[in-house]
Length: 560
Image (cartoon, rainbow, N blue to C red):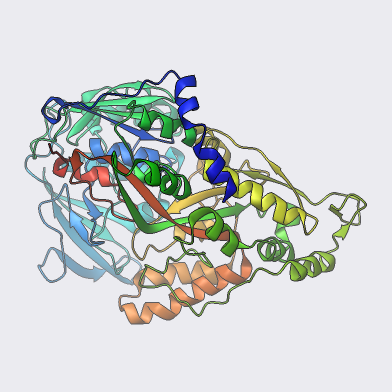
C-alpha cells in the first residue's frame, strides 16, 4: 500500500523532531531498567472498574488474580494453591436456593500471598471485592458474576467456599473476581459506595504499596504519560529480572516507533503496540535490531453502533453499512492478508467458531437498494436524505494516534460515501474514548475499537440487554450498542449452564447467527498483535487472549 511506503520515509526526521538521539547498546549485565512502550494510558487503575487493555497490561506486573487462562489457553491458579475441580473434590455440585443446579467451589489462597505493604492477602479481601461488586451503586462489573455468587462461606483466613447459583462449564474460573485490599479500600467504599469510583486509592494514591500484590508495585505515575514500577519487596515468588520497569504511553504510533528506534523505549508490547501493517514495515528495516513476533489471537476489531440513534435503529441501514465495506480489500491492503476478515465476534481460533454462519458480502449495489427501501434518497450533493430532509450523516470515532485505525477510518469513509452515507471522523485519546465516551454511550454514531476475549468467552456483558450501561447502574456493563434481543438474552443465560461442549455448539451457532443477521456491530477483522522485543530479552510469552504477557514477567530474562 502506498501509504505504508510513504510513511516509512519520515521516521528519521520524526525522531529528530522529537529530539530523540539514537541510543548506544547497553551491556546486558548492566540492564536493571526496562522501558516498555504502549499506545494507551489507563483511565483508572482500579482492578474492577472499567475494562481497558492498558490497565490489564499494567496489572499483569502488579497484581495477581486468583485464576487465569494461561498461554496454552487453560485455566490455572495464580493466587490459589490448586485449581478446584469436581474430580479432586474441591468443587461440589449442590442445589441453589432457586432449586436449580448450583456448585460450591473451595479455594485456598497461597500462604505467601501478600500486598506490597506486607499485609497478608486473606479471604477478607475476597469478601470485600464481593460486597462492593454486589452493590449496584458501586458500578463494578461484571455484574453477572456477583449475582451468581450468592453466598461465601469462610473456612479460615486463607480458605473460602464460593456458592454459585449456576453450575457452569467454567465453574472454577474466577478470573474476574479480583481481590481488593480491604485494609485500605473498604472504609472508602463504605463511606459512599456510589462515589467510590472517584475516591479509590488506586487513582488518588496509586503509589501506596498496599494496593499491589504482584512482582512489581507502582511507585510513580505521570497521568497520560507513564507508570513506573519497582520490584515489590513483599513478593515471595521468583525474583523478576529488572529492578524497575517504566511503562511509557505514546498514543501516536508513528512517534512510538520513533521512540523505539531511538532507544527511548526498549520494547513495544504487542497487546497495545504498533498496528500490524506498521510493524511489518518496520521488521523489513530493523530485523537485526529487534525480535518480531506476530501473535494471532482473540482480538476482534469492530465498530459498535449506537442503536438508540434513529438511523441506526433501522436494521436495513446497518446492513447497508456492512455491505458497502470491502473488508477483504482492507485486510489485503493494510495487513498483507495476514489477518482474517471477521463475520461475527467468534474467532476461527476459538473452538466454538462456526464457519456456516451467514455472511454478508461486499455488495455496494445491495447497500444502495437497502438505503432506498429505508427511505434514504440520494440528494444533489450525493448524500442521502430522508423524507424530513435530514442527512444520513454519522460520526465515526476511534482512539486518536493509532495510525492503522485512522487509515481504516479513511477507507471506510470513502466506501460509505460511495453509497451516499456521510461519515464525520472525530477521535479522542484512548483514556477519554474508553473512560468517558464509549463506557457512557456518548458516541454519536459509531465507535471503532477491539474486544479482547478469553477462550469460549460467553459474551453476556456485551450483548445481554441487562448489560446496557446507564447512569442508574453507575455505568456498569459493556453493551455499548444498546442491543436488545430476547432470544439472544435467553441463549446467553443458557450457554454457561450447558456443560457438554457438543450440546453448547448449536447454541453458539445461533448466537453467532443472530449477531450476523441483526448486525448490532459491524465486524471488521481479527487482529494479530505484533510484539517487538530487544534481542537481549527472552522469555516473553504472548497468550493471544485476554490475559497479558506481563502476568508471567518472572520468566523474562536478559541474555548476552
